[in-house]
Image (cartoon, rainbow, N blue to C red; front, side, top):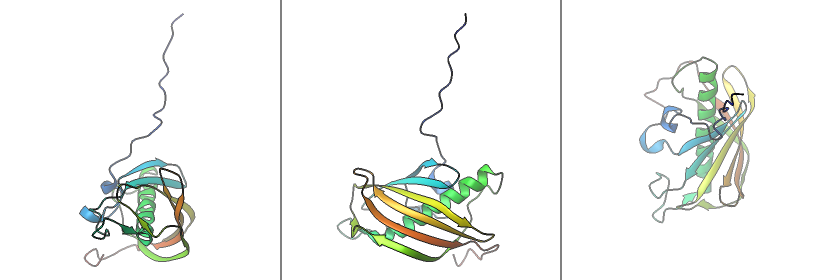
Amino acid sequence: MILVKRATPNPTPEFPPIGELIPHSRTMCLLDRVMARDGEQTQCVLTVSGNDPFADSSGRIPAYVGIEYISQCAAAHVFLKRRDEGGDSFPKVALLLGSRKVELFADQFTVGQTLRIQATTIATGSDTSIFAGEIHDAGNNDVLLKAQLTFYQPKTLDVSIA
């Protein structure tokens, strides 16, 4: 009898660097990496740094900046989904149209704090998407922010104004 060792699936799949998934550059690429994804949701991680462009002199970041963190997580989700479906191989610009049901459970994020950011698709149209987003403290799983965000992705966009 020959025993064949079965390959076990990688429990933490590798994803491209976040800078390849969203249409931001340099310091505005705020997330560290994608940590999980399925058809409807993506989870990213960020360890708060005093080098964040939104950090004050003490390294604190206002919690409302989390809306941008969720937006970037949603952008990564859309790109990965499009790529998996054989679509574009470059990230596209989308515009945040609005936010609803924003709940802040913290005033700020602090240097060294690790955040788990989640963006879940609620609805998609031909040029709009709605995501439910949450940010949790990765250490104790406390919910720090919840929001529902609506995005518009124009067919064409003058990137010189984006």
